[in-house]
Length: 315
Image (tube, rainbow, N blue to C red):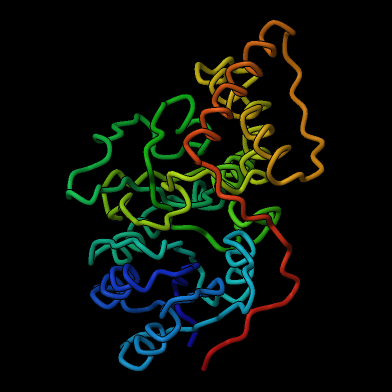
């Protein structure tokens, strides 16, 4: 029987935090789900731990493993193709979430009027911090249906969220496989050009920012291709909207270009057109930040190589 929900977890060297996800899944009130977890060439005991979980779990676990690093976008795309559920939940390998999460998502989905359901890409909810407190107060919006872009940039509700995703719609898109990590917001904004979010104004996911090898919270700078492409997309999207943080994005765009030109040497064609004085000041500040990165050894030089092989499935 096909599960209703597919939970996707990319993982790399997370033997110390995977228990959070496994425990959360084990404690779910709603049981009709599968867990697809794909290991990105870990060098610790992550795979050994996953095999242990598979033996003792009371739910379906499907384990995939790359021998050489592939990166999160590649893993997400692969698992999305293999997922059997109607809905997708991305659970980071250091996440945890409340026991009633899946049950409440399914109940909320069934409440959505059909005229909204056909254009709903995902149900979106707020997150808790590791201290158990909400990362942001109630959204309190007048509407339940809204685009991701409007929610984040017009309504300024830009704290970490959690998505319960309609797989049928997500499969029309693809995460860009251009680096080991690319900010997911780039894909969500592209989806939001055609589809909406449905707001469930509760907190379900517990978001941790203390993981030592976290991609998004590392003190080291890496993945310049992914960052530069995301920054270029966000900047061009905001040019017409005159967002307040446009200048900050532009500075970081040039900062990452300096990092790439010295350390990675990828051939990039990314260009941003602005007024010359505006560009000059952004380039100058970006260069100064780059110098700071050099002084404080903030740059991790791990060059991206496209992995053209599929992972093996561990039975």
